[in-house]
Length: 137
Image 1 (cartoon, helix red, strand yellow):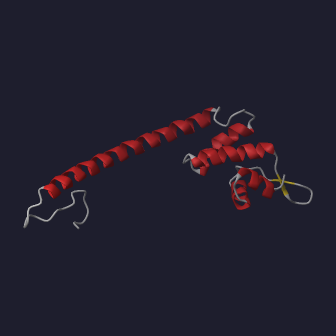
Image 2 (cartoon, helix red, strand yellow):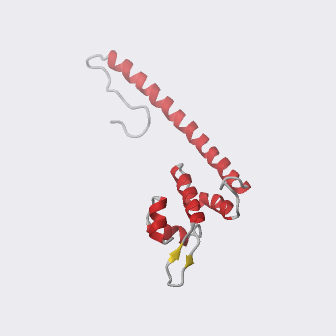
Image 3 (spheres, helix red, strand yellow):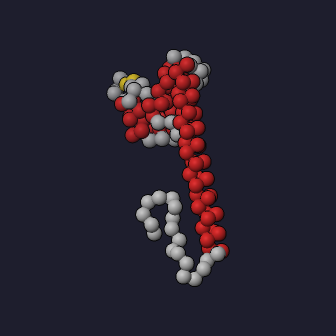
């Protein structure tokens, strides 16, 4: 199939396919007339790349999965290098979850403090101040 058909079937653009080709993720085969040609295995590679990117993997993180498929494995995540990327990504996600939980707890405490202050609002009392840091409002 030609590049336009592959792009349509993969739900992407020909520009994206050319970019993947330039990064070595998609093979660059040419027909006798110079057109790029692709087959079903290339569509599989693209689907693997797109799925991983939808999950937040950057393009370089998809490389081990693509290489695993190219090596003939039935799934792109059945190789040790792919499993290592999964483990690393889970570590990153766990760290982000901890960070977000900490921020959420801080915002929750601020909200509780602000609600108490609003209920006990006394005319002429001190101006409310944000305790989250940065410049006062």
